[in-house]
Amino acid sequence: MAELLSVTIDELVTGKEPVVKVVEKIEKPMNAWEFLNEESKRPLSKNDIASLLFVAVIILGVYFIVTYFS
Image (cartoon, rainbow, N blue to C red; front, side, top):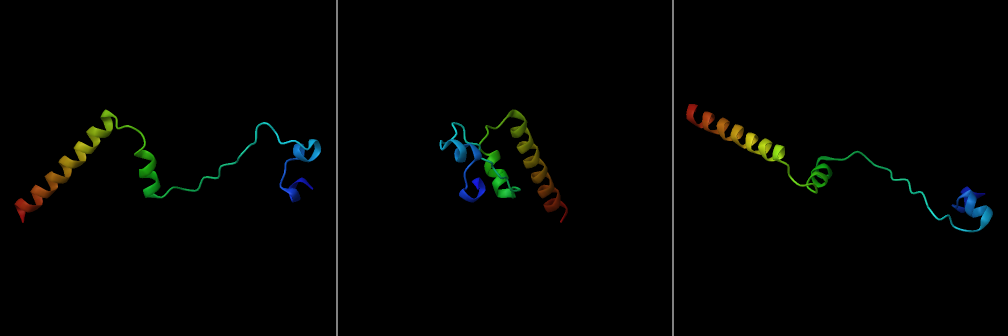
């Protein structure tokens, strides 16, 4: 009966709403855009900055090698 009325058994028996209502959060797998949005909410650490700098140096190095040898 409680399921039909979409209430808990406590609400059905006592007629009062419970003080603490449990809400289930269903998480779906994140796509890349959602992941980047969540990551952008946290502050950058020293390791993050070092990683970005390392990637930039590698990309520039590959670019200069390709342009020099072509």
